[in-house]
Amino acid sequence: MSTRRALPADHFLTPHPERFERLHAAKQAMTREHLGRGPRTRHGRRAAVSPAPASNVVGVGIGEKLVDCKPTGILAVKFLVRVKFPKGQIPDSHLLPPHLEGLPVDVEQVGTFERLATVPAAMPAAVPDPPNPRTRMRPLQPGCSVGFFDVEHPAPMAGTFGFLATDGEKRYIVSNNHVLADENRLAIGGPILQPGLLDGGSPDDPPIARLTRFVPLSTTEPNTVDCAMAELLPGEEATPAVLFLGAPSGTAPATIDMVVHKFGRTTGYRVGRITSIDTDLSVDYGVGAFTFHGQILIQGLGGQAFSNSGDSGAVVLERSTGKAVGLLFAGSTSHSAASHIEDVLAALDVRLAPL
Image 1 (cartoon, rainbow, N blue to C red):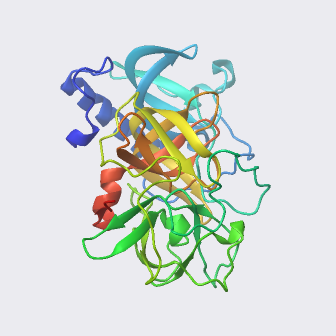
Image 2: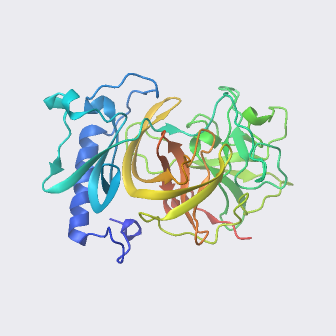
C-alpha cells in the first residue's frame, strides 16, 4: 500500500502497520462482496431503500468508529449505508457483520453519493462578501464556474474549475471528467465555456479552452479518479490563485482529521474535516453508477455541508498550509468525496502551475 495513504506516526488513530494492513484487506474483501467491480443500477436520493446490502451499502472504508455519534479513537472497517435501519427491522440474512476476524466494524448513514456537477435547479443566492463564482471571470481563476458544450448532449450544466496545471510547456484547467468531458462522451478538442451553460454561458461564446485529456470512467474496473484537463486557448489568461483562498502552496497527503477548505461554484467557501483516506464508493452519475476505490471522505464543519451540486472539480486544500490534497467530485447529504491529488496529477501527467 502506498505510504501516501499511511497515517502519520504520532496520530492517535495510528494502529500497528500489520493491523492497518488487516483493516485494508478486510475493507477490500467487503468492497468485492458489496460493491463489486461492474456497473451498478443508479439510485436516486428519493428512491426506496431496503436493508439488503446490495441496495443499501454505498461505500466501505477505514475510519474512526463512532458510538452514539461520539468518536472513540478506534479505527474500524466502516460500512457506509443509504439508511441505517434499526437492528430489529433487518432480517438476519441482511445483517452486516458485527466484526471481521476480530477487527471492529462500524455502520454509518451517509445517503446516496452523486457526482457534483449541477443541472437546472433553483440557484442559491451568492454570498455577498466572497466573489461570485458564477459570473464571467477574466482572467480565469480556479473556483469559478466552467462546463463543456456537447452538441450531442446539450443540457445546461456547470461545475468548478479546480486548479491550473502545466506539463512544462502548456497550461491547462483541471476539473472532473463529468465537468469537462461529459462522462466520457465529449470528443477531444471539445469546447469548454466559462461560465458554464447553467450560469449564463452560451454556445455562441468563444470557448476558453479545448478538452485535451480525460481519464475514462470505467464500468468494468474500479476507478481511482474523476478528472480531465483542457488546454487554455491563445489569448486566455489564467491565474493559479483559487478564488478567496490563493494559490496552492504545493501538495500534501491527506490524513484523517486534517482540516481542509475549498471554494466551489455553488457553496463558495466551506471548511471540513477528513474522516477517511481509503474509502471505496458507489457514485451515481448521469449514465449510471460507478465504483471508486481509495477515496477521501470529508464532513463539513460549522453545521454546513462541505459541498453541493455544482462544486464538482473544486480543489481541496489543507487549511493550515494551503497545500492541495484532493479533487472534489461527489457528495451525499452528509459527506463529500475527493480523489487524492497525487493520483489526479499522475493520471493527467501534469503538475500544479506556479505563480
